Image (cartoon, each protein chain N blue to C red):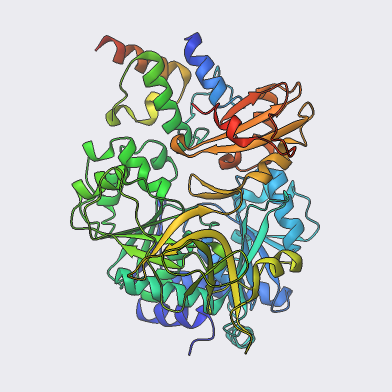
Length: 75
Length: 501
């Protein structure tokens, strides 16, 4: 989780990732943030985020992202 | 000959009265209802404002926004669209240039509007949308327009730190729309999928193809570009036939593997512009949709959106570099050397544009206007303005134009035009930034800022987020003891490029 928070903070230091739960639904993260984020997460956690994973529910909060990462690491 | 875009709206509103003109995720509006709205807004404004005035418009990404634009035009005025999601500082800069006495906003943006440095009157769209149309007044206002009257002022990055307002006339926009429509064979059966923000130059196609030809436009929710799994499903549900997107927008679904989920079944035409297309992504589109017409467009806002086009007939490879092609109808391209002599075919010169599509200059800024809109140095017999784009190009033996980058420090990032100088001017305003240099790493589409001083990268990003549009926020910040210099004292950018990774 720490590693994820570090990546998120570097990407968008202006966002409160601890508490935000509608990052996508409310448009806090835009498409270009997502493109950058997907690349960084793939590299950092050695996973491959697929188009099917790119739904708002998986990216609306840091917690949801962590769950997705763990799920992909288990596969 | 048409005098204004209102001639077009009158025609399509009558011919397609009950057809859907604009649609978004919340609703739709017919040509008839749209036309009525423009007349309500126009009547209200005409009773307040003399003709020929700018009207700032701040309205969201929805079907009513284009009726605010055209409503201002019905009043004999011109509109300056503003994106309410931009930081206050940016919006204030735009207002300080446009100096409009009236700002038209939708209810959702009223609070933002009230927080700005604006001493004029704020008009809320929802409050005036039922104004009874005064046909005689509107007719009188329409008669004040000529085809060279300004239609809109759209803002773009300026190297001095203040955005420049590019003024486009009715005839320029109409010339452009008709020329592109010819290449793309646009008619009333086309349904466009709008990607561009409505205040941005690229949206003129999505707005004026309906106004001109009776086509329809679906305004795609911004969220769908963030998580493009549903993007192609939306294109299919709305039976979208044509897309005029930024290169960044075309790249995105290909990059994120959207074709693994669905394919746009109804798509016939895809026109892209804004920056150089990386062909490894275009190849993915071509592999999946081989029968679509692909058109590469090139051109600056100052020449009304685009000036040349190239129909991609060949199958591209990862390393194909697309030409920018031939000038549209009513556009003329001349290449000039530094000393204002003509550039021979095959050699590289500055791309200069002339024709009725030239902007009327930068709003309230003669000095900047005169620098780039100037008498054609090859013509000493009569007045002929050319616009010097600052882009470099060469003609091949077939008269096809090829693009070779910029002669200055302007870049294209995520479909937006940015002066690196403006990033630096902004960074220098931050406490703890002593000196800085901004560079663009094209391969990774990343904006870098190298700086000296004790500011943290968080300080800098926060300042940018609060004061600049999102696409102008540097992604990589590198703090140095001192910026490397060349023997002449200038910053050594080549050494800095060594930090790219």
